[in-house]
Image 1: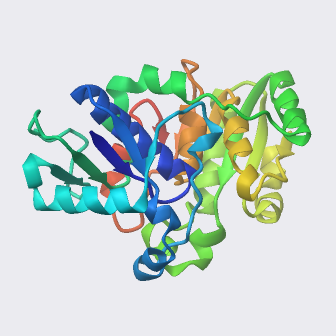
Image 2: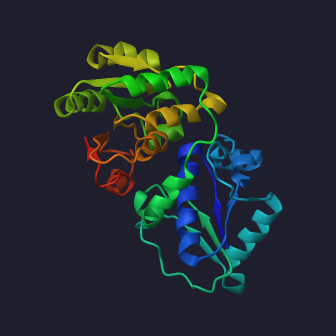
Image 3: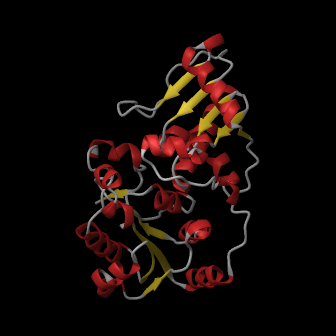
Amino acid sequence: MVISCLMGGLGNQLFQYAFGLRLAHDRQTDLKLSTTLLESRLMARLRNYTLRPYELDVFNLTIPCTSSFETALALAKATSGASGSVFLRETPNLTPNLPTLNPSAPLVFCWGYWQSEAWFKPVAPLLRQQLRFRKPLSDASQRYADAIARARTPVFLHVRRGDYVTNANARQLHGFAGETYYRNAIERMREQVEEPHFFVFSDELLWVKTTLGPLLNPATYVEGNTGSDSWQDLALMSQCRHAIVANSSFSWWGAWLNPAENRLVLAPRQWFVSAAAQTKVVVPEQWTLL
């Protein structure tokens, strides 16, 4: 059995699911998901993170989740190596190549973010089949979807500021990608794409309108999808032909979920403030770094 521990928002949960899927597929065994870190207020306080709901239920997935008790037992078994079980933890120097694992290990417990396509590329076709949204769009989101379908060349632009600016931990790890990055990305998109229509997603739309608005015409600013409706922004992003992503797992998946070939996806070269060298691992090789 493989158990993948979920932590973070929808984008991170997708990476953790994708990694678990690949590992379970390789080992020809069952996959379960642990939601303990998503639900534990105590762990949130100890680890200083924001509690997040389980969000993978927006897709057509039928993966069972372990109870807190089952998770605790499995974690104890894996960390102790009982019966050959394995605790597989992502570390900063762990390259996206699966380490050699005992094929007879009864349990592999996965702890990490696994933010790279390389971790799950062998099962990418299967993953794309599974990651189909099961919930219908709201009427408002459907109007945006219709506008995307009508546009000659729809391009999504995602600007994440919010906690990247106001939260010390998020600011130190990621940090806002920067106005210069977005200006350069918009210019590059206009150079390489005919008649782009920008569909803008942001937690600070007023900042985008004020700072980048004159560069974006024509543009549609997508509003209203917050909280439990945030997945609808991901669905809309995935319908756009090209993309300008933030250093965010959310828009990373918004770009990746569109399977069209010959797409132009622009991403910030500095994905992490303190670990810029990892950028080439996070960003797929077919994307363009700026």
